[in-house]
Length: 175
Length: 135
Image (cartoon, rainbow over all chains, first blue to last red; front, side, top):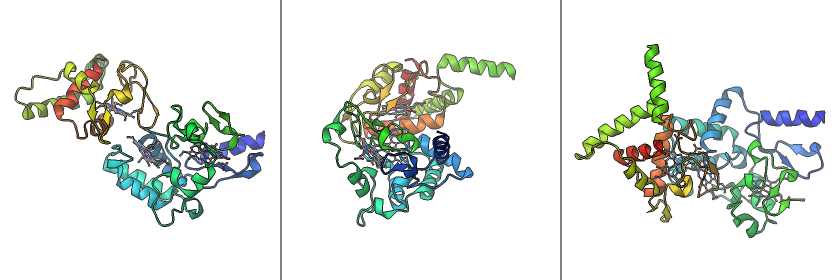
């Protein structure tokens, strides 16, 4: 219990991080896969990221995509998946820098064979992890889109995607 | 000075918008006058029409302000594109609303583009803010 508490405290400090649990038998499998600790001076940027990029959907953890993906996203906010997500120049720059600092450096999970991925949900690693999910689970109104991570991953906002925290609306837990 | 502050806070809660947003609306009003000779002040009824009517939006599909904010501004809304819940838009139901010019200008720009496929005019923005304040 004490160990568990310490680990969740550590997790809370890694605001930009993503925690994966390969299989779900307790925390020795915890690995901070896409993350590095948040420096003190970056905490204001992280808060701005959360507010601005979390206004229309969950603020996706920076570690899900590499630098070139975030760079392309930040240069195209006037037509962001069919919506206008522009903000003033100063905030755009702060968020751009934040994303460059915490982007993934792990090509295995984001490699699109040369193409620049804008969607996390189209990266090969993501597609592989979600291959057993049916269209019906996604298109139901409670989920709507595979980009709606929090609909199934109940702790996604904190960067935690453990199997035991998954609850798919109208289907239940994933075990 | 103290008296002034109390007065400002008082008028703020009456107006349902912060003094900085009221100031911004005064600026919109000046611009509206130069753009439209017959402009005689903002009008909540015109604002309601702007807010509730359906248009061909940025995505080439029918959309209105109510697609996300619903017709009852004191209720929670839902982003029609992502499904994310939106806090009530009415300053009466949600005191955070219409308190920051930065927030208001950012969202009016985005939301007019999404719904009207263009930015709003000064008069349209003032009308729709007047409608939101009264609801």
